[in-house]
Image 1 (cartoon, rainbow, N blue to C red):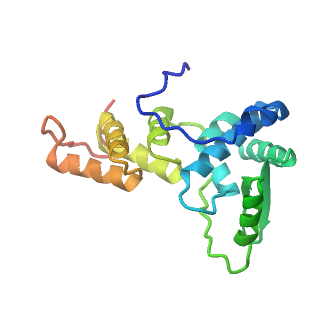
Image 2: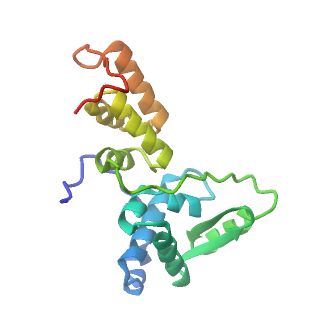
Length: 213
């Protein structure tokens, strides 16, 4: 596969400058570097203060599952990045381990998250299955909307069975253009097009048993 180039209006995210210097020299394993970059990306998708990535989120990530292959490899690479002192790992009783950048502010956050009365509730996505996935529509979602969980992946696949495939892509682009980056907003766009029609005034008559090719 060849990368098709950066789309117009592609989003950028801040990356700590040591990534391009001492850390680049320190990491000589591509899988470890993939995990580190993906953790940085996942942290940037979160809103508000107190950002961290749970082990469940790592195992539920499509990109890591596709590139590293299985949960053992993901956790092995994440642990190696922790050992190198780049990420900071915290184990929590009855909750997923969490990963943070190894900085003073994040270490302080770790202490807050692990308090017994912490109100943090983990999202526990199921491990992502790399096989039989459509990278096109999923990559489009990640590039324009945000983190792709297995649940959202199933919703995207179901939407492609209900609506014309190009509708799903167009709805993702429209949601991004309106800065409404959520699956619920995309779903409402598709439902509106089905009722009112889209562009040419024709609504989708597809059912789950009828699929566009």
